[in-house]
Length: 128
Image (tube, rainbow, N blue to C red; front, side, top):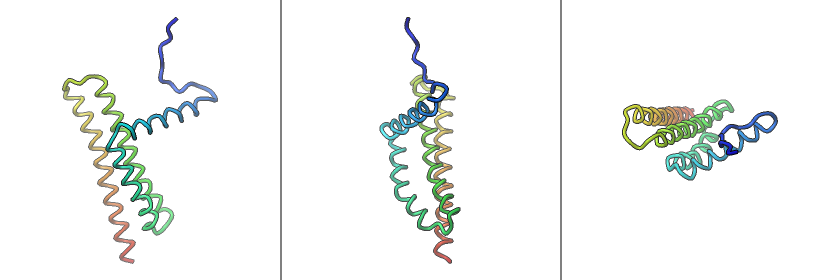
């Protein structure tokens, strides 16, 4: 009998391990197939140490690091939306375009907010 392949994470004790395996596959796929994700990782290589340096308190350091992580999370979700839309079909559809544009807007907002916060913390750090 042919069994249909599913993408579930199993159940019971093995579920967390299966979920971790899927997450690692997703990160590898993003790195391999998404140039924007690789670019944002390159920026993270600068902004993580910079945030640790300019953050004046542990809370501020964690806030800055969280912003870098937010950008990466938004990019992963945007890439997921784009992959699903492309899987459904290559022909133009208004809703497909809107879904891609909304994902892109989420990434843009996360980048702008991150840039603003880093600029403000940098200003505060050097004005004291």
